[in-house]
Length: 286
Ligand code: PLP
Image (cartoon, rainbow, N blue to C red; front, side):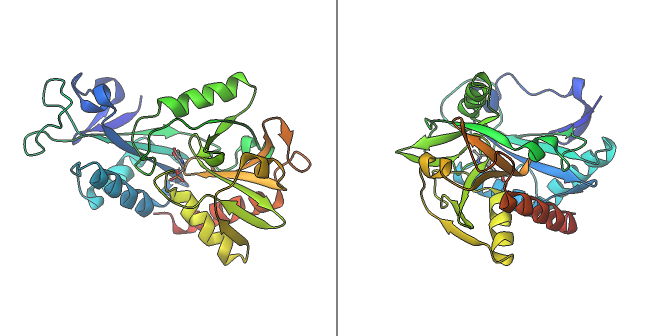
């Protein structure tokens, strides 16, 4: 039985509740973050806190608590749930004023809802999936236009993962106007002749915390990085490909739409970046 956090209280998971009128539930009017825990410590907490703040600001939502309080809650949940390797999920919604209405409630009288819980994932870093590499398919990107805001509107990404599963693959990359935007829950990259290519930041993609760290580490390791639009055909002709996310770190991609990349095993650059990322992030974890 997990201990979870809801609106100022630590409770057994079966006793934690939110209103049926909560706008997160009725309107997907909420934002979230997922922070990894390795060695009992938080990976890139600061990056997540800064992005959370930005998501809230973009949606005109109030912060439910300060960054220091957030850190304290994260640490307390890790401690009481004895998490060595796993994830912390955080969601803040615009709350509930006791009815359903499209109009935002007055923030002076309606407090945001904040919920946090842990997911225990032993073996998160030493993942068999990362040793094998992921098979992905490409699907159309039909999401809304503000993908830089980390909202809880995850129905299409969820459908994308179901399409991948039905096709015998692990995940999907999304295509808009002929170019790859990102993965259903990760940022997308390919490598050709030693150069790492990924889409530049805009409102079209989530500004991945892992993306930022991995691109910095790649440049520090003298790897060549180019941020530009790319097609799925370029990725299929690549030497290797990979994705990044806070929960899967650097994940090699070995197959795209049935086309095997290289020898069908994780490529050297993705493998090296995964090692560097895990190493450096663990050193900086708090
Ligand atoms: N892109 C999308 C659509 C995502 O949902 C995520 C993570 O959930 C990412 C990218 C990767 O972001 P991060 O590295 O911050 O986890």
